[in-house]
Amino acid sequence: MPDGSAPLKPRTLRDAAGLVEAGLVPPEAAPGLERLSATYAIAITPVVRALIDPADPADPIARQYVPDIAELETLPEERSDPTSDAPFTPVKGVVHRYPDRALLKPLLACPVYCRFCFRREVVGPDGGLLSEAELEAALDWFAATPTVREAILTGGDPLMLSPRRLRHILARLSASPHLDIIRLHSRVPVSAPGRVTAALAEALDSEKALFLCVHTNHAREFAAPALDALRRLRRAGVALLGQSVLLRGVNDSAEALEALFRAMLAAQVKPYYLHQLDRAPGTARFEVPIAEGRRILRALRGRLTGLAWPAYVLDLPGGAGKAPLGPDFATAEGADWLVEGPLDHEPHRHPARAHPSAPPRAAG
Ligand code: SF4
Image 1 (cartoon, rainbow, N blue to C red):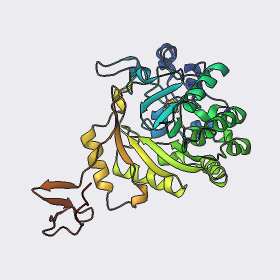
Image 2: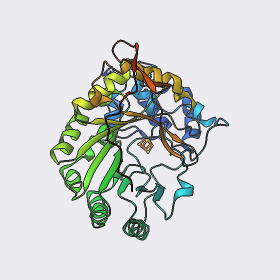
Image 3: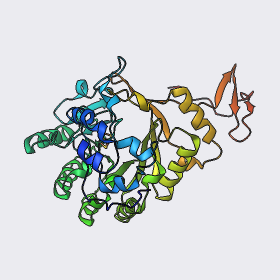
């Protein structure tokens, strides 16, 4: 925890000088981080700052937000648009990759800027707010595309919008009979919980099924201000899901993930996705190999309630979609299956039935 020797300033840290003053980086790092901030945005809110122990060089909260000069090195396998949003953009602010759902990105600002972000080249405090005309054109696209059943608000962070604008977007989406589900992805409840006011919670009151997917990566992010914000959202009837990224030095152990998923469930946030890192520029220090991710998750099976189990997925480059990465517990052996027991870790044979009980299908 902070040593308490200096009062925390209630402002968001946005530059190298602020990071030095807060004791989060040494003064000699400042010139390099000045250069870095011209390419990648920096923001650490007071709530997040209070979670960081500056005396711990391996602090898992600091690691997510404090920039590192290594970010300026882009490796050959890294891509500026790793999930290929651009080729699937029919109108500005919309990404349509899957037949039944599409993203709406009304703005590209966030409360904090995560050092591993897959949209790090486009998110930032100055950019990406759709103009009134652009927003209406994006909403018109949703109204005119009946195959799309789910609208996913992302960005940036849609909870950075004013309650008035959010209410307008949700009302327009709700007016389309073919849209059943509205989903929002946000870091706000844990990183800027003060934005979750009664007006904002009320703006999320929708006639459609609405899910708020909260991005968190470490159990310590569920501190009192975040828990209060999540409670306000629950009381407003908002269903809460959790999404995380598997990150080296943040949550790359069975113990860390167990604590994270338990903290989510205790806040009534259902773990939904655990993402394999997208290879955005300068993010190599966060990557956990898939084989290790599968081993970590395998160790959690049987010791963690099934409610806590997210889908471990990789967003394939080129827009091929999100693929589940396992771990697998079943292997085919002829017509039988060998299934590993989550409690004894032994293979159990599940034989094919000699006399299938299902009635044959009627012809035609
Ligand atoms: S809040 Fe989300 S979109 Fe914003 S920087 Fe973090 S990961 Fe990227």
